Image (cartoon, rainbow, N blue to C red; front, side):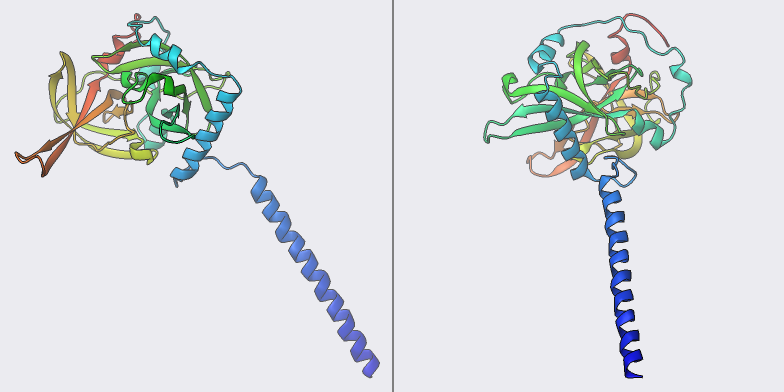
Length: 300
């Protein structure tokens, strides 16, 4: 009897070890599959650090592979005042009403630059949007013009779409400093982008929305109204109540039909007479007509 009990205990112990081994192998196998599965850098639940890191790594890889145009060349090209391009003539009928549709055509644009205070290379990000599936895009003029940093500190410019595709900017087709807009082309390597529909003038009081990347808070959606139209440096502007901030430069502004009616340009902080109490922040935009003036043919 004792022999049979010991035998049963021994068999049970062996079976337990075997089950434990199989179970652990199953877990390890599952973990291995999860680790190897590609993860899209942009999803409905946005991970800003992951997106920034992913973009930086891909941009640096392209730069060191020699697959990009130097920033100095792009900076010289902003003197181009007009270009002849082919846009999709059916663009005005494209469905871009939803946030999901709008963010597919909204890009993160980033400049690789050498830091003046540390040995590291940094990626400075702003916003842009697609106007043709073969790589024509729009952002601000000031994205391609040096600000406080020496232009020799900038290395190259790249964009990333919502799918995690990273492309080098290969040419600034045309730009206008007064209107603060630029049309540029990226090398998509035959990947098709999702263009946004371009609208027309918008009136004060009409509803607008913005998809942009304020302070690296990627694909932020805000909504508001056109608050007024005015001139700045002899160029037309309009202000909106939809929120945006640093990093939103070059983002598309949509009307209620989902068409792009403007481009984010700048903010202006209004203080009281003491200069200490912030009263309001004016959000300044460029009418889409400023973009259309950059290309010769009319498709709309």
